[in-house]
Length: 227
Image 1 (cartoon, rainbow, N blue to C red):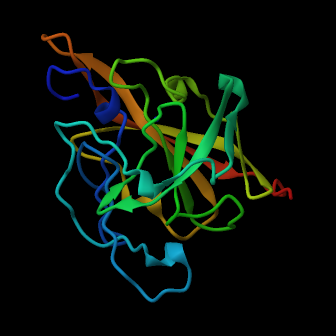
Image 2 (cartoon, one colour; image 1 turned 90 degrees about the vertical axis):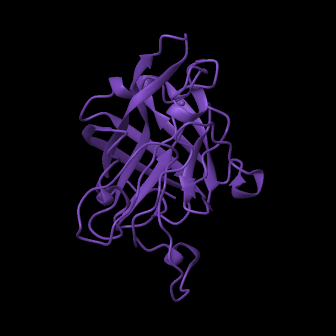
Image 3 (cartoon, rainbow, N blue to C red; image 1 turned 180 degrees about the vertical axis):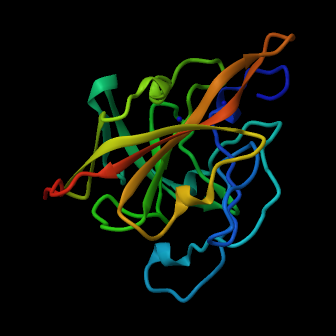
């Protein structure tokens, strides 16, 4: 799993900005890092502290984002495989950096937001994200995600559990507008939302940035849960 200025945009343009509204209010807002609003709630489990709540001002719109090491647990989220793309990437467990989703700095790794559904959950959305390239425009693990097709398989293995998903939707959203709040939904059948950036734009000064958020949605296959 990047710059809006003349500098190469590897780290920023592949980070995604999402401002979450209250449930049922629809879609949301602009570019930067994957941005959510977290509100403390009665603690049942760690991820129960996450509640879609309110608009938040965009961050990292014109600067690189680097995740603090304290918010990234390398490899603790297992492995993500996309056989049709030849992708096999380690999944780090990431938390919230204030209102921003911490994304692994290494573009060859993917981060799972621990406030979203786990691989073995039966309901809700699991959100995984990674950089499309680094600051020198070297392609990352998700660089070819835009070439995925409906019906493609995604396999997520974590904590001894293998879960298979099938791609059902591929959507692009202008980074100036953000992605729908449903990407982070906590109800309904279990889906995996894999997020990166797309639509590279070269600037006159020789830099580049990405103008879209790419979201691949895959539903969990029935009886695909293996231990």
